[in-house]
Image (cartoon, rainbow, N blue to C red):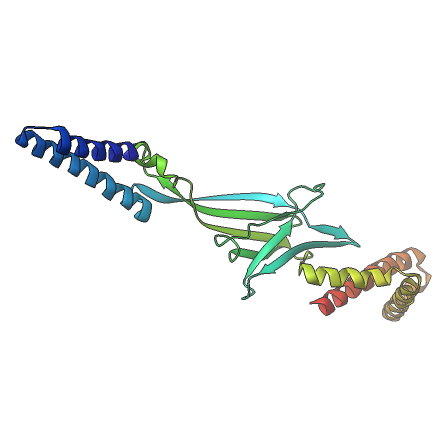
Length: 247
């Protein structure tokens, strides 16, 4: 509506100044038209530059997310650094478990520097999106300035990723290095080496356990249970070492 008032003011100023013959009415009509025109320009400028008639409104939305990749017992969420300072990133994740192409956060000035990672004791991961946008204070202001296109304009977006402690958060470069290392372990030679190391680890742990508790020597069921437990321990330690080398 403010643009219509601006046009009317400009048109009225021209018509009054050019076509109204009586001097008194010409002066009065021109003066009123100029006031309307000037006021429209002032308020339009205030809305455009200072968001006159508007206020910042913040909303928070939390949704469950899923790892970018889940292989070899590893849950990975990736990120891609952008810019030169290293503080700006694009985070890569999945919105659904069966999503084929991962989603990513926005690579713009409102978001890239506001991606945060927090660790949680929960088993599932969540994404909290906090957005601040411009909104009109009332329907009256929207009536006058709605044409400006400033409604819902984003001021700031903050993404907080709450990840389980066992999730890995790696850059795309680190993920490629990790994949190469894991692929090397899948070869016949690599599998044999890992198997031998695992057997040595389990045997050493079993020997220590039997020394501490001699009754284990005749308890086959407990031995099997411990062997499985020690095998899992070896796998976790091996993965931690590989990830540490990658980072």
